[in-house]
Length: 220
Image (cartoon, rainbow, N blue to C red; front, side, top):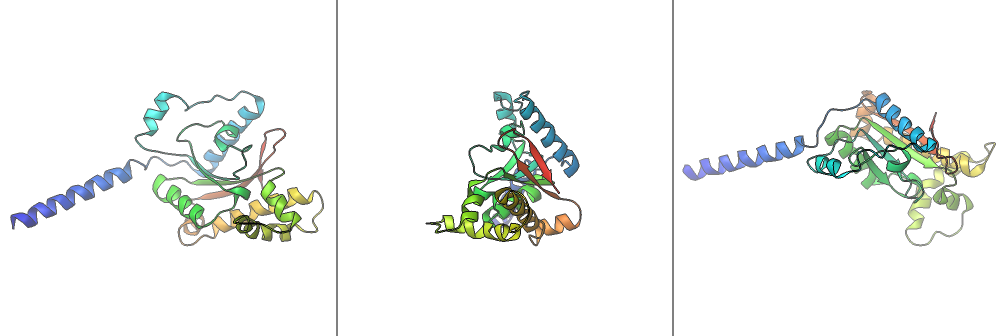
């Protein structure tokens, strides 16, 4: 009997610790409109050369070591010229970021976003494409895609097909179409993300980053 009681007490203690650990990553949530406004305000500071570089010091490091409360998630290209924390003038713990070439979303990316939404309280996801994206350009040009690059081309190819025949720059049209496709992919990702979108508890938007002037444009 005493052994059973000890086991039950130990189990209760473990459950309590797990609950506290989970709670440490659950902070107050920010609605989508406010999160987008904060991102665009940070981008304006970046464009104007007035970045505040906040949340990048030792005090912030100590603070976020106890738990993270990002106010937005960004699905961005792995391109070295498109670092979300810099172009949105944010710091440690502010953004939950997924970076893959061509800003695609594979199963690992979807699982990561589900974690951000379900456990961290993120209510805004921005899919961010960018000007002259190399992954989209390679898909547009066609030809052999060696190694695992073929997986990227396969994911981006529907956007290239979608953009064919549109007036204007073929590459930029494909970049925007790719963003739109990924946005739709996230919105329809059942069961969790789709359910949150359907309940209007999660906003998924698309954007385009201009390499030349640093401006982020929210796409319709």
